Image 1: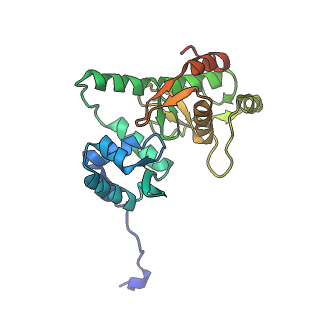
Image 2: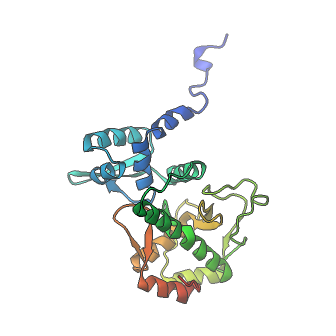
Image 3: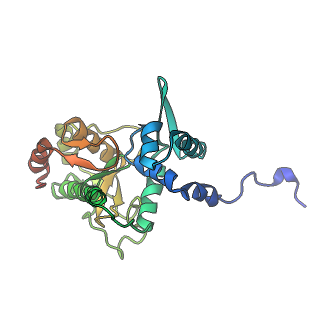
Length: 252
């Protein structure tokens, strides 16, 4: 008989611990509201989830304790954000596997159309806009290594909204010059510069990783994109339409 001290301290992954948190519709609405990478106050998240402030606080405490959310204090207010990219990847994977909710109003239909058109996927662009920008970067030779298309037979390990594995995209020297001239700040640190996701609505690749974050930051700081006060949908401004045409040959 083995001594208790020799036994491993951890067993297999407890998937049920996370799954039980995601079984509540209100908590899922909170996570979806935060899937654009921003931090939001508890009051806004309560409205997004359609619950009272005390109920929202209870949900937020459970999500934070489980490591899915991170809380930040700003004065008397507490703001919540996803704990990291891996949580965003989990949410997007669940979106892919989940059946769509029926559209019961014009408002819901408009919201769904906006999400498909242009949205954020944690901290990078997705939807038709995201895949259009990815295709433009490939056409211009900024990126090389793939064609931006998702092929179920070729991309054996990839599936919609999951981080891509099978295609190795690389930034060219000319591409680095193009991005610098555009005002994109290339991040430093341990995060991979170039990743991609298989967009769950468009079934094509959109750019993720540090470069995906840098592009989104530049689009927002240049007022090419307008972010709503809540939700993942983004709007291309008049200046953004001109910039997309000039720099990316994208007719938006």
